[in-house]
Image (cartoon, rainbow, N blue to C red; front, side, top):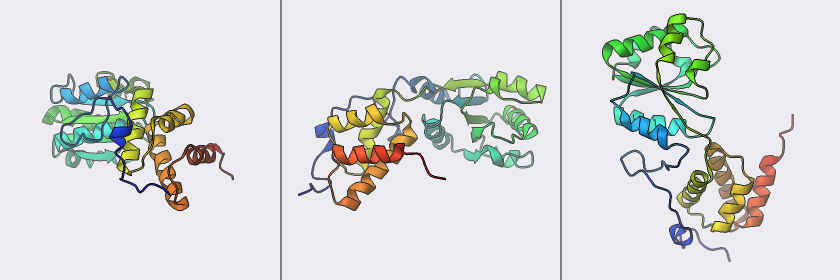
Length: 235
């Protein structure tokens, strides 16, 4: 019979040696060589060398998670780049801290971005921007904005390494009270697309399939989920 969820301690089954950030609002953030420098930049606030920090890295590397840690610490607002307009800049900075996600985007309002950076300097506010690319590579037309972006404080997150992915997978399974062993984790690591977002989606699908089949999380079940996710979508 399948084992009831929660009957086994995942921590007892798996050795989990990744450092874990214990401060408030950070209990889900796992630290590895891939993101250690970026976390250090976040923790340097409010003593950043510039009022603007640009957090860069590939999709699914944890930029938004780090940005949310800082937003909570700073009690700031959080917006998508598409929400940035000249008229709304003062409102966005009324708490002296702002996260802007997914810059530069397809239709960057350069005047608004320039105004935001200038007003942050004037009001001694701080702005954290997330982006997949270094700001020096953004195709901006305003020379003054390009100059401001080149002066920004930049912290990069690398693609997740094995230690980070292993830790994330372990925690995701534990959060769902899904008992898995080290062999299952290793099996997934060898075959999954290497992104934190993919890890979340994969564990969610494994959980869903396990519930639907009223089955334990076996290697066979995991293999079927992985094979299904590798199949190209029709249409």
